[in-house]
Length: 92
Length: 196
Image (cartoon, rainbow over all chains, first blue to last red; front, side):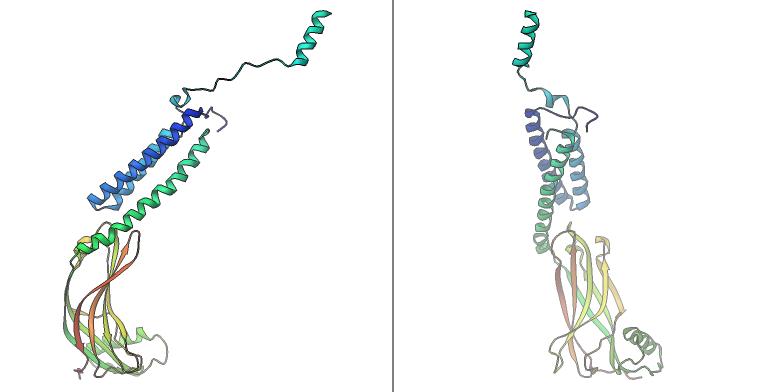
């Protein structure tokens, strides 16, 4: 998506992956246990579907808490050629 | 995980691991649940009719007319083979409610007549079938049910045949293996020929 700023920082990327695995596995276990107790595959399917939607909502949008540790770049250093030209200008 | 598409792709990828794992767990529960089931089957034979048929046969009474229609339906071509055809009337009381669990999509219930011939040692003929899709309908109770299909033999001779009538059911699961079970043996001789 080039239209909006959707990239997140490295710590955020690690967090999304962990969150995704945790939420999906927890929902899979819940759906299996509830379906087994209620003896209904339909209920189990609906719980898993809800799990997918929740996971997508949590990890897909670039939420602000994924951007708490932005990368700090070093300040831009001027090139030597430009410095020489500036010196020449000063000399003139 | 840096962009929207990348996260979506990873999510779908991980779903392809989680969902099959869930389905495998579902399939593994089915044999455990089936061990607990105790279906009860009672088959009782009311009447056995046997008659020699050919395309030129002219039915005399109602039963023969029914059998002749089934015979024509069984061989829908011009020169149907001449031969013995048998039809059975039976009582069935089968309680398959306990077979149903969360991994059962439907049951295909069928009555099989198994008999021996000198040349063919093992013959199976399906004489009646029924599909159960709901747990509420799983108790089959019927008196004097007429079999749907005719009993025939490869050499077209049924006189003196003595066979077993067994109820089979195929358990069609949501996921996993299709399991076939059977119960209730009743010996049915086709010796007494109903003559009209």
